[in-house]
Length: 399
Image (tube, rainbow, N blue to C red; front, side, top):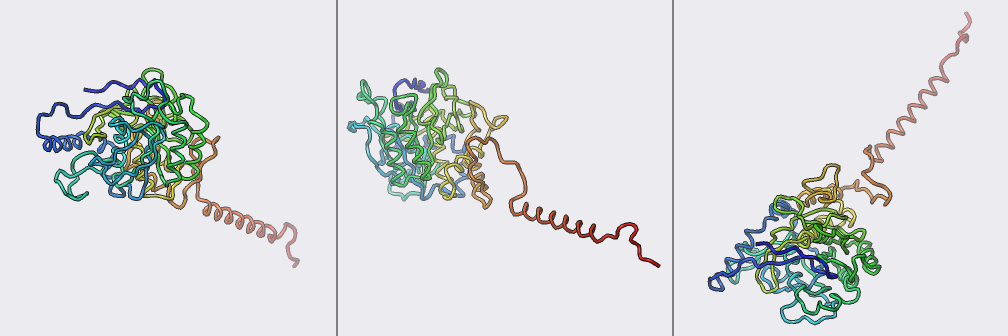
């Protein structure tokens, strides 16, 4: 059973509908936890689609802090325990009972979930074959609450986030050292037109080396509106594909950078269990995890080059390199790391001016070009000397 698509009519929405993974499981609680954790891992089809096991031979995201701007993250879930740093609540609303942290916890698990062992008391890494594995399981998550859950009654008749909550959250994350900022949100600051404060915060983050990733939106089958913060310049906008790597019908087809798995995705919940969900939220969280892997392996790369590596390291690249439904293709962690390795080499190119499109023309590196020019000059001088020294006609020596 699949949950209905989110209509995305309210401002600043967490863009992911959720559905319990196992319903009516008539077994004891301990056995239920064991069975649910095993089922969660078995249903993670994105692990193969993103080639994560190949990517993890190089890095698992060590040393990277990923800020999750969302509804809050519950750090006590077994798959996230020890990986979450709690930041501020910028919504201006109290955390009422269990009405917070569902969407944020789900996103955090896709970024940095490390799974857990079925054996009580086991150390992390001993046998973590249950639960959700994120794309960067060794990364840390900084939770910044900027919006409310769809089910929170406080959403009715009021703003869903504090004044400029997303803009403040971006700046807070950067100032606390976040290298990647994940935003599975829509309708920033209550407007589908974005806001000057958010755009300024995005520029602030990029100039300080942070990589920003956001979901493209879930109304691709209807209005297909521009979705903020995904539409701000410099933000990696992510759409969703299904198990066959086809664009999901709900995925917005505007300003896409790449697409990633976003259908039938298992995530952790705020209650310690798991859900199955559809949405571009999941896709964006996974690409944020890929950005964390690149930042961990190649910390010297700029946000521009990290984005370029993600866009170059894709599968199913459209004819011509880009189209509205796929962006630059389906994100792939192993291929993105390979592209990042090439960009991190000594001949790394500087970002092109905004008005320049396409790749630079191929040619010899600057040092080789200088040698060729010097050789041509020397040859020209030699030919000139030869002409000057050649005897002119009629100047033969007399007998």
